[in-house]
Image 1 (cartoon, rainbow, N blue to C red):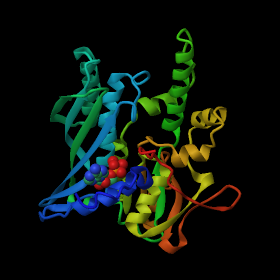
Image 2: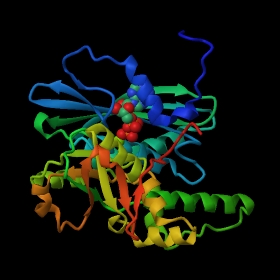
Image 3: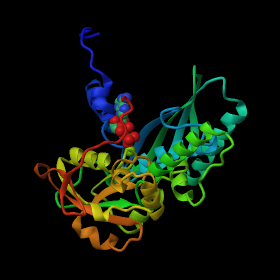
Image 4: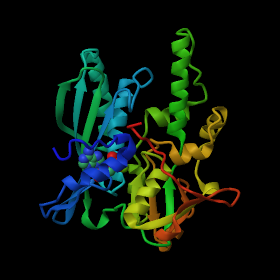
Amino acid sequence: MENTTERTELSSLGEFGLIDRLKKFAHLKNTDSLLGIGDDAAVIDCGDHVRLVSTDMMVEGIHFDLSYMPLKHLGYKAVATNVSDIAAMNGKPTQLTVSIAVSSKFSLEAIEELYRGIQAACEVYNVDLVGGDTTSSRSGLMISITIIGTANKQDVVYRSTAKDKDIICVTGDLGGAYMGLQLLEREKQVFLANPNAQPQLEDKDYVVQRQLKPEARMDFIHELKNLEIRPTSMIDISDGLASELMHLCKASGLGARIYEDKLPIDSQTEQIANEFNISTNTCMLNGGEDYELLFTISQDDYAKLRNHPDVTTIGYMHSADKGIHMVSIGQQLVPLTAQGWNHFE
Ligand code: ADP
Ligand code: MG
């Protein structure tokens, strides 16, 4: 132990502050460890190609609530979120291991249902389940997945390689998974107050599906290859656009400007946000779990993506001293802050 009288609350650091402090314990010794902590996946040299490794854990009561998350969906989502980190490196997932901690409240049938979801996602993303670990837990379920992927060395895309004047792009639409969560939480409260109440989820299928069955954007990674575009930097949106854009900026030593009127939102997300009195900005900037891709391209590639139906260009990178801002619809410069998830609050 170092200084035993000192005590720093984790809540004062937040998740990313804590990870920053942990970096000092990791010194890379092996020459094939090309990249360690700091991106969506670690990168390991294998000659002409690289292996990508990423891991993500989901904890009952923190990341999921089994009162509205079916176990099969949970298994699917646990895999999809890991695949998403490989996609964010412009790689292809190949194998994964699954570790679970289970309490006695779960039956064999329940765990099999979880694995049916894992298997379904492994089929969709063409990944092999090659191992894992099984242990008990005092309460609740934990799932930790480690995923392995591959990429040609020259194809890997990092968070740290965006360039000044690059164009910032995002796939799909944002905020849906967050509004799905709000909706499911509301229905749970209604159900707890009155167990005879029927869920009011008609016409809300899109946002519910965004929360319960997110997809990794491997389809888009394949498409980038066909379009012969290699993003200059990339990250997947697990914690909200603002937080991920700040990661890209920090890693690349740049600032950014995005435009509120360009941010992509689905009409159902917008309608439900209005119903909940939540600003659509909050949904898109700070709502997590959309698993879309945020990436930058050089201006030379802009023509190839300009008319792409599933890509929105939302701004551009500039020097760090200009900061990270959003231009509001009223033409005001709003500094972006990362309000993603702080698990320690
Ligand atoms: P993502 O949201 O893409 O999964 P994270 O924010 O979880 O990424 O992690 C960012 C980086 O920090 C990654 O390189 C990850 O491997 C690393 N990391 C996260 N937690 C730890 C930890 N407890 N010890 C070492 N490295 C960690
Ligand atoms: Mg990620």
